[in-house]
Image (cartoon, rainbow over all chains, first blue to last red; front, side, top):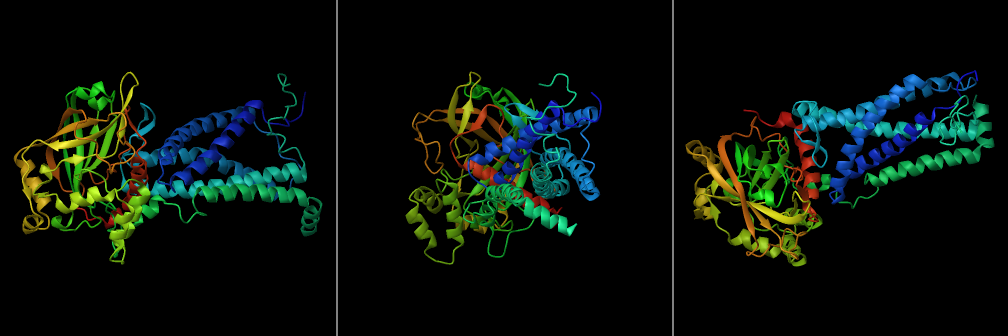
Length: 187
Length: 346
């Protein structure tokens, strides 16, 4: 088989969808936990910390996989501004996937909280206690998370635009049912 | 380009409607989760704002228990707590402690005699690095049964309606026990003479995994001399901070850390209900306060004494308050650390 790949690898697709569900859950948990004083506050906060660190690890793995496996090219007839928007938004999505957990971890460190993930499992502080730092990171965490949600909505709208309006194979390259041309082990 | 878009819209109307519907549904769910569509929801912001006096909060300070002084010392664990809990703070040993004696007021300048409730914020760090934080008060029971009732109490106490508190007490019979204590209990002339009670119920987890509900108190080892509010007022507006600094400079002050173990059927979800006096207690160690430091630039100022910061071996129970306190303390901490420039340094 020759020619460019048409879909993401199965590993890439699996990572994408697991992370998509987890990131959406993180954003909902985040705004949910800071707006409640109910008993669920504690389990939401614990989940937010634990899932956040898991996502940081997954994002780094995903970057490595992306560097190795690449991505299918965008359709040649996609207007240049949309091509640029697609590329820029993907860089931003990756940046936020890595930055938000790090900022959260830094915020807990600068707050002098012990960072307990679950039971006796703890993470070390990555910053010293500091009012100035924690305030900066707190604001960054909130506004970047809201921007992340907006960007995800845009990403989703664009994916559906490719799948429902343009029907150009871009959405299909990431759906779970996709088969990869040239993937010898593929079904 | 414009024509293409218009014709694309016509041809793919259903597709565009689907995209719009999906995005709107997600955004709507997000707004609902964030509470933006539920103005009646009790949020940490509302709860914390309700503490503010009419002139607004004291910027840079804790939103409640705003007046306080730092201490450092040690917790000498005698090992007796290990029977009920595998927490490393209960293993025999001497662990660093830091804390804060405080008054239950939103005004950091309140004269001592005008404040009924005194508190102790405490942090103990076990040998393995696990941290146990607690924020206790000298009242024997909490005023109300639920966080919502506590919010309503704050609103009633700030209300312009002179009968607001009476109306509140009528609707919340559990308030009577705290009210009786507030009215009749004597004061003392020292932070060192107070018994500090955790009031909330936590679950102790033994090495076997067995769980038992418990409450804890720090009981002063020295003599307690009851005095009247008038006597206290006569000693000056900041007597307590001066007195504890002088007292600790002369000799370390000690409290016995005491766990009270629940019997089956004891109310665990309601800190306004005291447990019977006959419940088993275990003295698990001694808090030794060795050094007093002013709060500005002191070691306790930037610590959030969140009662859900717990070592492995102590868990929250069905008591709804630790979660509500954690959420509200985090909000207060967000606000005051962002206002740090308003906090006078030494």
